[in-house]
Amino acid sequence: MYLDHRSVDGKHNFIVDCFITPGNVHDSVPYVSRLTHIIETFHFNVNCVALDSGYYKKRHFKIFRREKDIFCDWVSTFSSQS
Image (cartoon, rainbow, N blue to C red; front, side, top):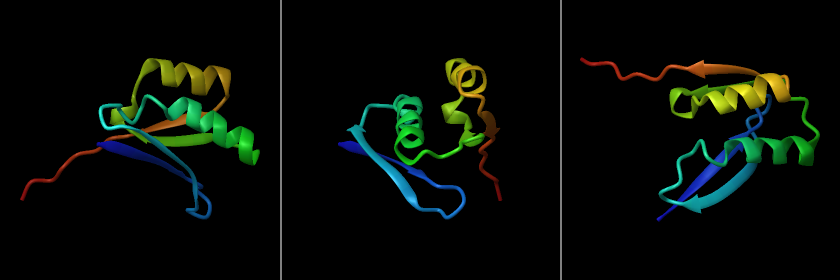
């Protein structure tokens, strides 16, 4: 089993990166390196990323905010009950 990690451009919704990992690798593990790859490859001026709570890790916040000056918006996910 494998996972396909995709990143999209927020302006046009184009898929700009696709990265395959074994199925037991959490989505948050390759995220920082893939974002760095995208920035370096396409020269995007990234100033904000939106992530769900599954990506919340203090190391991500530190890397984004302090080292890359990127604002992180942590989106809460929930399920509604009928």
